[in-house]
Image (cartoon, one colour):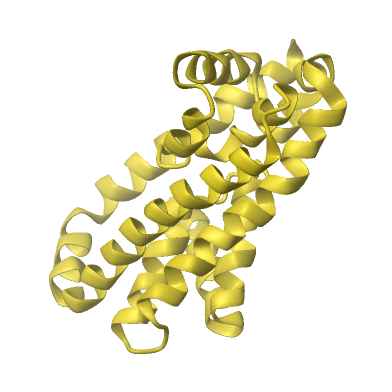
Length: 205
């Protein structure tokens, strides 16, 4: 069952990128940046795998990922901008954003200012929901979207590169995967459930 769940997710990502190319990368990354838990850690490495096979250009894949992040950040930013903190605190749970997420984002912005948006785009999980707090705080658009793009570009380059290396050493990775497949699936599943529980539990609040 766990294999099937992860398999469907991976197949969806692979099918979209295979059918749509760089545009598919941008679309999937935009979905992730709209607070939907579609992990870039699965999207971009597969794009890198395609690069290793000569299907995509390395730089095109990375830039497509960064562009998608900016695109997906736009609705989230304006939702926070016009909805305000009270709206997001009340309904943010439906966008996988909890009050604690907002508090964490506040701490980042208080500590690093506008640079927080650059740094957060290179961090797992927090990079997905940072746009809503940015809108709430009415971050200057030119800074927010510029830093979103730059941080996402670095993130994209790193993960696409990981995918390239995986593609170049696929036989070794296959051996590792088949040797530890149950453990890998369980770890991925537990992390996914923990992430979703952290957000869904606030629906009852």
